[in-house]
Image 1 (cartoon, one colour):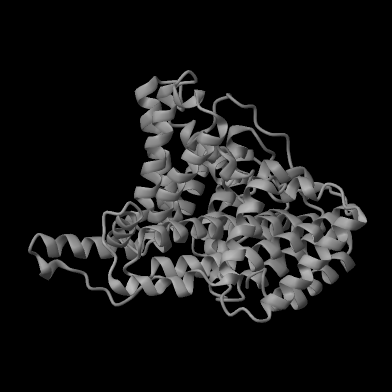
Image 2: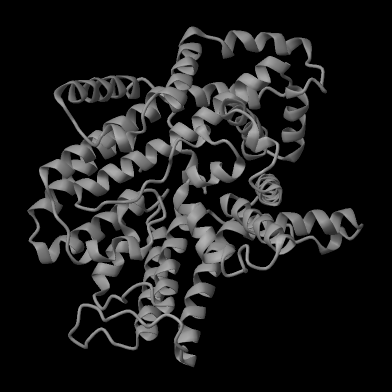
Amino acid sequence: MVFSSHVFLFYFLPLALLLYYSAPRRLKHVFLTLLSYAFYGWANPAFVLLLAFSTIVDYICGLVIARHTPFDGRYDVAPLEPGTPRTRAQRIAVTVSIISNLSLLGFFKYFNFATENYDAIVQAIGLPDLQLDLAIRITLPLGISFYTFQSMSYTIDVYRGHARALRNFIDFACYVSMFPQLVAGPIIRFSEVSEQLRERTHTLTKCARGAAFICVGLAKKILIANPCGKVADVAFDAGSIGLLDAWYGVIAYAFQIYFDFSAYTDMAIGLGLMLGFVFPKNFDSPYHARSITEFWRRWHISLSSWLRDYLYIPLGGNKLGSLRTGINLALVMLLGGLWHGASWNFVIWGGIHGVLLGVERLQGKDSFYRRLPDAIRVGITFVIVLITWVFFRAADLPSALAYLGAMFGLVSPTESAALLGGLLYQPYYVITFMIAIVVTWGAPQTWDWTRSLPLWKVAVILLLFGLSILVLATQAYNPFIYFIF
């Protein structure tokens, strides 16, 4: 079930809010957990078993780490002292949590990738009899990349002494499964909502701002991301494409992935507000970035900060010398690329970002690049991001290299490529493309724009919502990109 669907907007969401608000305080998390499991199991009920397994394992591990039981009569206990020695049982518990979550993620996300590469290798070295040739293919459960990271952060934070362990299983299950951010983030750390799980307020102001987030997010998705996605699909699926068309297509994809994912984040934050939760910002105008380092401070903030705190810093961060810092950055981004998908394209995408992050770190603050005007630095950074998006979007490595060749005039388009203009430059798509430019570099962020809601903003929001619903009724193309990660 996607947020930008009639089923969610006009059936599931009203029912969910009715049940949630009508439930007594002590049962709100029960209802929210059941609703979230229904939301998650909508496409495939079997996926619910994986979510429940991850939740149960991490709940038990959290209790072991905190050295208390579900029946000791307390809601939670004081966090462990950071820096004090941990017992063998505590070390085992956090290890079990990490291994179980990574095993789930690794099996379901990378089994097909591993077997396909194994078969390719044995075929290449002349041993075809050793090929597995498995007919079975593993289906990727929705959101597994997000909720395994989220659930794992709980046990790690409890182990480090950064959070209190929960005694109440329903509260913990509610945290892991909350439907606003379950299948596509943002990745909510337990420490960010632990106090809100204990006590939070439900106000008209929160609800109104949440509704505004939802309406603006829906408009970004339906009115901008989807049309840009159609342009990107035509460009990347063309097989042969001219230089200008190739740049137009990859810029359209840059707009699609940004407005698609930031729209989902807006709607997730809005739904959280309507349920009384305040989730952190996940995007901060990433195409305003003046460097790749700044880009990752602005893009998918919950993931980049998760990788920093749970992988980069434990590897040594920037405290072990310049060479080790560069290696750590490259390794983290390689793994970050692989987290996005089981494909060499994602590995290359992450590797390029890792190398660039390392180079920027080595250059320091006094480099020539940092003395350039901000507008030039923003433009250069955007072009670099566009080049890396080619690997992110292309179906495979040969397709990515062919597309890059078209972008830089290294591949001559066929005569049939001239026909693409009739599809790419339809007035509707060109107008949407121009609107995307204005919104990306000229409009305020949803996070800031919704802080106050005078009548004129309410009118704009209602207009955007009405227009989005009308267009949604006519659109057959309505994917959410990050559902596949």
